[in-house]
Image: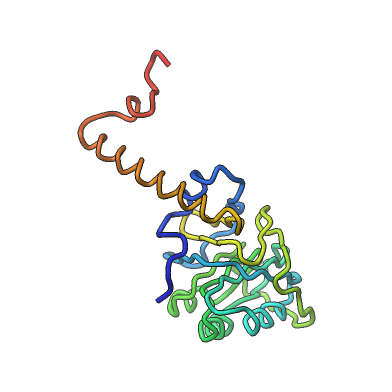
Length: 201
């Protein structure tokens, strides 16, 4: 069992609390229903239609990390059950990839969380060894190794390493405030009252 470095916060909470541009574009979605992951990024620069970089990343990434891979958005089957099993055995937590994956039923069955640009069975080459641990841009956001990646049903965020503590503290405060709001709604107040959205606004 791994520690939830995101303190249990959802991506929407983290994004809104952060006041930062940290949300990957909405085209990167869970490959199976219920996928969820949080952990430090290990970045991979690959090439579309080639998955050798992912094989190298599984072999070299430290345990307890989330692979974050730029494959240029290419809709090939860059990742599947074989790599997922290999990654689990190496202690990796999940994959966020700007590219396609396959074997989604099997990924769900083994419980390996994957977030991808799409699903594809088109095969890949194994020619480009890739860049490991280098800064990449994925889903419009720059990600560096050590940034905190959080992904769930609503999306993916990448918190810069130097901002992690502040963002999670702000997320704690936001959750506390929302708990108060829920209590007041249950006591009969309206959202118009609570958010100052009355007619005289």
